[in-house]
Amino acid sequence: MRLDPKFFNKFIAICAVITLIAIMFFTIRHSQSQVRDFKTNIESLQPDTLSFFSYSTPDSLYLSELKGAPTVIQFWSTWSGRSHGVNLILEEYKADFPEMAILAAVVRDDESLVREYIAKHSFPFYFVDGTDFFHNVYAPGVPSQIFINSEGQLADFHIGDNEKAVREKLNQLLQNE
Image: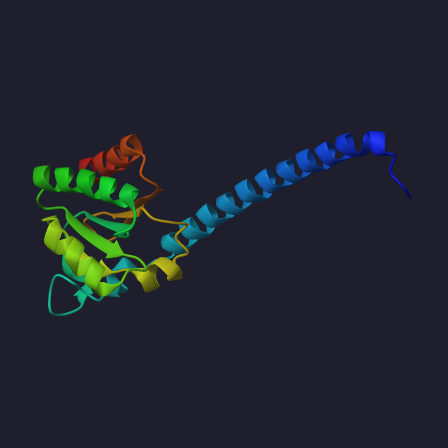
């Protein structure tokens, strides 16, 4: 079969449009699948069994040690400006609600970069290595947050750095305490 040259550009344009639609469809479908998997994995989570390598203390940090305090696990990285923005929001809430615990769970970062970031910023967080946990729950990206109530149960989660949404989730967590 041979394509008439006068129809070649139209043929290529139609192929490009079909390809673009397919890419958009499968990208959205994959993103929705990641969010579903993340939600499923954190819903089956037993928060009191979690432990993390801590950059802030000489020993590992067990989430069960924070029971009695509303807790936010913030997945972040030093290379993510969006993560830093969420850290600033969390710092603001921590100043107003000192009983809230924040685990800044760094993902895929070199320890020297993490220690440099901690030294540069005086965030009142528990800095922990969250890479393994991030992969185990199939978090779709950084920043992502998991909200745990003072009884140690999953309250909610959020993916991304939407300031309004993060503040709403924090307000819900703290109102129910």
